[in-house]
Length: 156
Image (cartoon, rainbow, N blue to C red; front, side, top):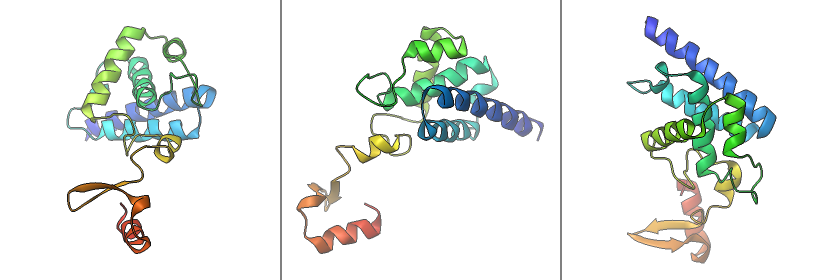
């Protein structure tokens, strides 16, 4: 019971830290994704952020989400650099990148991740119009309207 309380306290601290960064540099979408990721991390059997500096974990959460959502690409909005993240949390770039990699591997996060992509990324995903029907990948836009409706109802 005591460990659950410690996990919740640390999770709240991480959510506050990532939220502060998102308010200053990013947007509400990233803030919500950071909270979602921290909460998911806190439900792991071995909660990763129980050891190590909280600043490193906070930076790694933002870095992991930024990595899969093209945060470091100047042509995307919002835009921030790895230096922005590391300077804000006073962490080294190599340590932050390493912890970020651990987080991405832990949750099998990648580009256009359905769970951790920003709304912009989800809306512009090249996979959003694809569906598998009888083992064949098809573009939904080329299907009959009644089949498109059926796929919408099923959540495809």
